[in-house]
Each structure stands twice: as C-alpha cells, then as structure tokens.
Image (cartoon, rainbow, N blue to C red; front, side, top):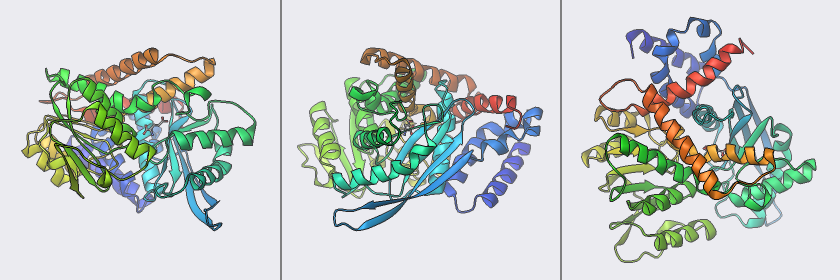
Length: 449
Ligand code: GLU
C-alpha cells in the first residue's frame, strides 16, 4: 500500500469507527478490505465522486426485532433477532441466519459485509445479507427450538422473498431449523417459493447443499496446492470445528487421501495422530449433529487423544483449516503454525483469523485463503438451489458438484489474477479486489441510488 493509501485508510477507518462505535468485528472486516482495495480505489475519480466506498460500507438497512417464545416450563422468553440487508446491487440479498448467544449488530454487519464480497466472487447474481438471533439452541428441546423458529419467522417473513432476500443456515441453524422456518413461512403467506435455501431435498432443496461449504473449501485448497506444485494426498490437515463445514471438509479431504488430524469444539480438540477414517468421522458426525453432544464426552478409540480446552493450532500439521468461527485463530496460534512450518492456511469459517494472525502469516510468506473465497461453496450451491426452484426442476448430485467445482476453480483463478505480484499468491488482496470491484462498478453505474 502506498503512503497516500495508508493515510486514506486510516482516516476512513477513524470515521467508520466514529459513526459505528463498539463494532470491532465490523471495523476489522472493513479494515482488511481497505488494505487490499485502497490503492485501486484512489485512482477511480468517478467512483470517489459517487461515494462508492462510503455507500459500500453502510448497510442498505438493519432490521432488529423482538422474538418472544414459550419455553417448556410455560415461561415466555425474549430474544433479539436481526436481519442486516447489506447490499442488493448485484442480486437479491442472500446470506445465512446465525443463532448464537454471542451475536450482536457488529457481528451481523461484519458478516453481511463479507457476504456481499463472497457472493460477488461466485459470479452469481446475489447481494449480501446476514441475520439471526442471540438465541442458543444448545440445551434446548426440539419443541423449544421449534417455537423459537416460528416466532422468529413471524417477524422475518415480511422482509424476505425470492426477489428480495433469501436467507439460509449458518452456525446454530441447520436442516432442522430451516425446515421449521420454511414450514412457518408457508403457513403465513400461503406461497410456495424458494424463499430459504438449505431446504430438505424433498421440498425444494438442492442435492449437495449440506456438503457444499466443506467440499468447496477442499476444492479451493486443491487449487492452492496445485499453484504451489503440490498435492493433497498424505498432507496432515488440522481442522478446527465439528459443525457442518468442518465435518464435510474432513470427509472430502479423507476421500482425497489426506490425513485429517483434528476436529474441535468449545470443549477442546480431538487429536487423531494417524488421521481420521470415514468410520470414525461418521460416529463423530452422529455425536455432534444428531445427539448434539460435546467432543469432551466422545468415546475415543486407539490413537485418539482429547486435548481439553485446547485449539488444534499447536499440533504438527502441513495445512490449517479453521472452520469454527470468527477470530478463533490468534497471533500466538499463527506463530505456532509458522514454527511448525505450516504450508498454507485455508479458511472454512468467516474471518477466523485475527488481523494480527494474518500479519504473522504474511510476514512468513505463507499463503492464506480468506473465507470469502474459500468458503463460498455453500452460498454458491444456495444460488444453484434458487435456480432450481425458479426452474421448478431438480438437478442431480453430479450436476451440482460439477457446477460447484467450476465455481471454486473460477474463484481461485480470479484471486490469482488479481493478486499483486508478490513472492506468493496474495489471496486476501486477490479476493477483496475481485469481489469489491464487481460490486463497486455496478454501484457506480447506479450513480447514487
Ligand atoms: N452461511 C453461509 C455462508 O456464510 C451460507 C449462506 C447461504 O447459503 O445463503 O456463506
């Protein structure tokens, strides 16, 4: 970045912090993108006149609402719901719903901002949004989750639609929640439209949607490896998380003969020294997704160790795949990875590396793919689900997988093409520039609408 750009970035961020106080995740996401796009943006006189960057960093609207629901004791509980409709320039709003106690407006704004860039990278006509609630499904009965979802949809339904906003799942919102939300939308509107994605295959869902984020992440990783003249077979991969993304990334990696040496959750890390096999992965999947139990209580077999309260980043590995949540991999973790000579880091979650952790990898010339590129497979297949719903058709799993592979390949190629010429491919700058320019060009063409 030039001196002039650095000054512009600093002043822009100071202004953003002043107008959006107490939103550290949002500041972090915008700050990262500015590192990549400012040099280019400062040369765009017309865009600057039309305040494209100022418009780009202000959501179209944030909707915040009360969600009251009855628990199993007959007590009414009150939670808060959000939908941040961030940017509708290149298509209807699209992005997941997250149910977790830790969410707030900052988290949804950062996620909506990232989603706008991610969706642009897929080249599908999708704008960016994110939403959810500060509700924890953990420890809740099925009936409680059901009542919560219905109450949540009771408000959300008036803000969404196939040409307006199409939500999907994210942390805490899986097939079970999407089914209830979709069923209630039908009840409220009497309209069968593909208003949510991630639906069951028998009621409009796409083949391969559940697997798409994890598989897409591994397809992207394979392109990164190819770019470095390597291949995935026999590589030791440390994965964090044990949700949908982590489990399907692990499954595809095992299929391609990699050694998956870890999975984790908030209780700690499961270390599988010689690598997971499909049999054990299936047991873990059942434990986590059907039984919804913690890894700490998972009965491990030979060669498997549970590291209580630890993250996977001190394990010896060739590749790190953070697939849990934002800012899970900190500076000290990145240093450990560098010490162990990790070859590359490929994000399965959204913004799992802190800014300091990213800097450690950059200083050590370790390629690092940002989630907006490497985890775009999920939303890409959501886009394909929308196409199928619009056509009133169902594509088979092979066709969806073929399209997913093509999309991940194109995203990788776009990142490489737009990466500044450094010793290694700069995936951060490549992804940010590609995603930003596409939306910024359209916003500029709209003048200031
Ligand atoms: N929540 C996922 C993401 O972060 C998927 C969103 C979607 O399918 O709309 O991209």
